[in-house]
Length: 309
View (tube, helix red, strand yellow):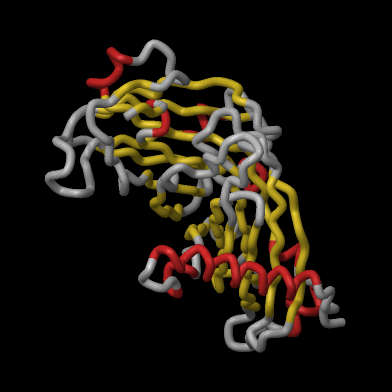
């Protein structure tokens, strides 16, 4: 089995300097599947990209000893290369025992058996300097956007009801366009719609996300102010909306951030692909169901329904 060592265990991260948030990542050397891999040491690396998606530098963070966990301050490290602008960073773990085979981290290495490091997730933590923090765990999906030149990478269909606005709370939807292929060059178009609690469309749009780049959607700026006011719950003063988005071009990782800057509060979650709940058991039918659902949403959004006035 041949594989890029950087792709054995990795997680793409959105550095969100524009929101005033500090990003840390927690990494473990323990296999979450007991008995699958013997606990061993790992070398941790951080790839830092410019806002335009260019690889600026790859930094060795250090070793994670056997049966240990370590936190790394991504904002502090990446901030030496990119200042005050949102951008992508990717954290990698490589088993220390394999480093003797690695002369260049971007060259494939040969493994005797197929490597299984699934569920080796990273703890991604955002916080305010003088406030609380929120965290979530995730990893790079297998073969993420690994389609070759001229081939379609993948697609995206996702939803969340975790969009909440109030006098103190904001919601941002973060879109990450990353690939395990270092030559990846696809600019992805991502279309989305927001609905009120009674199902009325309140906003829709489409954005482009470059390769190895991120895009942050500010929900408070997307929904007209008078509709935010109209949807306000008189009991707690909050307005809630549902979000649906899709991309024909790529598998986009979607992260939801609920923030209360004045209170120093932050919560983070990644959306769960709805097809995971709705897929038939037969794998042969799963892709058809996803494509059909995506086409329905494409028809809805291309119909040009007018937003409430």
